[in-house]
Amino acid sequence: MKYATITGLGYYVPDNVITNEDLTQYMETSDEWIQERTGIQQRRYFTYGKDTNASMAAAASRMALERANVTAKEVDLIVYATITPDYFFPGSGFLMQRELGMDGIGVIDIRDQCSGFVYALSIADQFIRTGTYKTILVVGSEIQSTWIDKSNQGRSVAVIFGDGAGAAVVQATSDPAHRILSTHLHADGRFAEDLYVKDPGSSRPNRSATKEMVDEGGFNVVMNGNAVFKHAVVRFTEVIQEALKANELSPEDISLLVPHQANIRISDYVRQQLKLPEEKVINNIQRYGNTTAASIPIALNEAWEQGRVRPGDLVCLAAFGSGFTWASALIRW
Image (cartoon, rainbow, N blue to C red; front, side):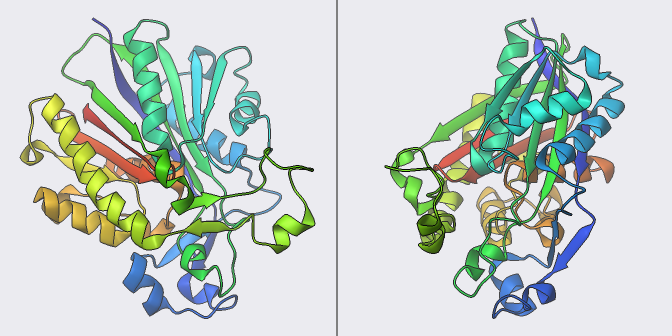
């Protein structure tokens, strides 16, 4: 029987470090205010002329391929998650494919927001289980610093987001002891407008982007913070328990939980609900902020580099985001 396993990890974060103090140049805020509400101390912003969504993804992918001892020509498929593509279309996955010289293979471009990487990993898992492909590159990449509203009006959102990319090489294996055990995907579109960006959109009477849309705030993030928090803490816990139940395991069996880095308060609440000690949950939101689809692969990379992910460990990935979407993946490393 065929299974899927992660054989290489890579990530890229821009050089440009933006501290909480730096943000006080644009809005009325403070380091204390931001840390108290989010846990964030700093984040990374891309450098114009150097970084693009696709170039950051390519850098992360090169690292993952090298660690997996896999060449670009051996990759059969790219699954690319982002909500901040370089172009309206085509997606940045195609631009990364071009940069890496992977011409001819399929590219699946998905938009599942903060759950994007787990959704992408699930797609890779299914293609490998069915025997369709043997080597798949899974990527999450975001440049969010260009569209956030760095004003007093937008500060509750602007202080959260950062830029970065993460990648994983997923390959076929016949070894049931080291593999992706299961993935679990959910969504509820009833709450789409509780966290969304309205414009640019195709369902308009005129061009998809106008000065009026910009002036009216259509390009700004709209977030119902209370609703997001209340749903997130419930769905995070549910989808983790779902994965454990599907594999006849319990929270005590988890070696490391890698949650989407949305808010330190959400991560702490979920950890307490599952009765996990702090050392079994990785949090790096303090240094990178919320990097949406890149969040989980960046955190997983750092955990692996720190020796917190070892062969035989039970690793759980979990995410919640706009849509609403939520997802989990359980991996026997």
